[in-house]
Image (cartoon, rainbow, N blue to C red):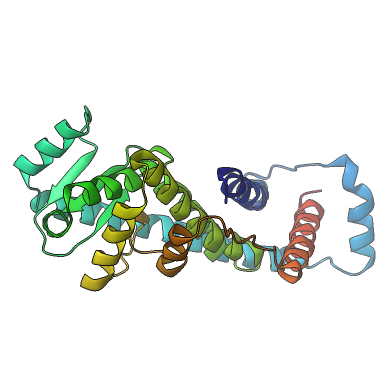
Amino acid sequence: MTKRQSSLMFIVSLVISGTIFLQMALYVISMLAGWNVKFNIVEVCHSTLKAFGLSSLEYVLDALVIYTLLFSLWKMVSQLIYATRMKKRFQQYKEKVLTIEMNETYESKNEDFLVISYPGTFAITMGFIHPKIIVTTGLINLLTEDELKAVIAHENYHKVNRDPLKIFLLSLFSSTLGYIPILKWFNQKYRIIQEVLADEFAIEKQETSVNLGSALLKMLKVGKLEKMPFAYASFADTSVNYRIEYMLNPLTDVQWKIPLKDAFLSFAIFILICIFFIYALA
């Protein structure tokens, strides 16, 4: 698995979703502002679709646009509300001394680390603009110093790569544009690849997989983290069995094959949507 694969998945998802959302924005602007957007290169398509009796296409597009935009707005507002609530709750349980010590240990000038007083064992990275790594006292008490360093290195990869933002965007795309099935596949596989890459980063940092593997096993024995209703990257929350197998035998890399049926269906629907919008705007 390579960073190139995950970057390609993210870029393709961004292009597909961005194109559809851009056309929806142009469509809304043209309706509200009376702006007549012309695309001379599609006059043939316009005439062809009209000949097939698609003069009422605007109603179908209205329903599609309203559903997609309202659902997207609801997802973004929900994310903002839940993330804000959780940040306030974390601050209430902040362990000031341990937080200062951890930031000093990892030479963080912007307080990238936050230690909270909580018996549960988890380490997550959250935040879009300035991601922070949240670590519980339960996890600190459970792991050895080397195991904790491995977990921190793993989460630091997510922080530097801004994975909480990318995970949220891919989740947003796959849920709001559910009629493009390949986006769901991209969302699932991106998460797995990023977790494996974060593991590889931590292993390279320590030059051994022992600490990372033992930390993961200890956290699994205690219990998995319950899903929280906002975007974050978690150390022991995604594809654990696959990651353990990969750590034990990293040479046997699994090459995923793109589901051709979903890819073809997604491409056909994407082209059809583009034609519909071009027809409505022309």
